[in-house]
Length: 255
Image: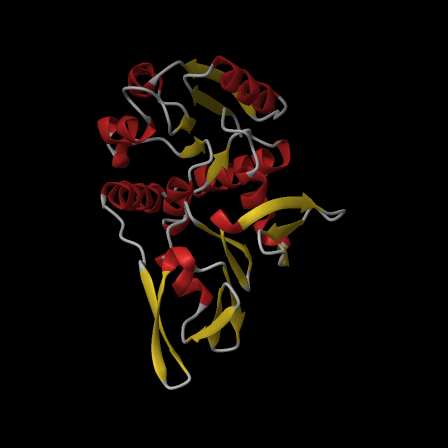
């Protein structure tokens, strides 16, 4: 397999880092670069690379604008690259599209590149196009998130503003909702609840735990690469291995 790859990023250091990672793969035969969205549109139309590493956040013409300009059905396979942006990440996950978080970690890069190669070999362009079109629709559609929860407690219906929730934990067919010293039971699944919460405020750290980021005091990694999260009220919560990537991205300095 011989691949030509186009790197699209407005940051020179980011392009250099991706180039170094790509150069370690013997199946990558040619690497080209575009410094912005406009250059990328021209390069894709003229050279038709096998794979595009496409930065999402770029001035004037961003990654999504590049896709719209070329047309999702005409785009080569894409591996999206993004700085920590919970909404964009959720959009990729919802539409089953792969992405890399900046700063890009070698292990994660190797995994994503391997999946991209498998996608190219399968030659299933129609599925890829549908996923990208769905992504653009998801990004374009304004999202509304839960503003309050209503739960039964001691024969009463309790209304809780979502910003007052500290953390939540799965409890069989319910979710424990922790609000200060009070704990309520909500009849819902963790997956349904996660999709209804603003990812800029709430993050899932374990298959059974969701945390309000505004309540986090500090995070400490352990020997297994997982994290212990301490809330402002002293509660300590353990992350799950599956969610370590999200937490590592969270603690990266965005500046």
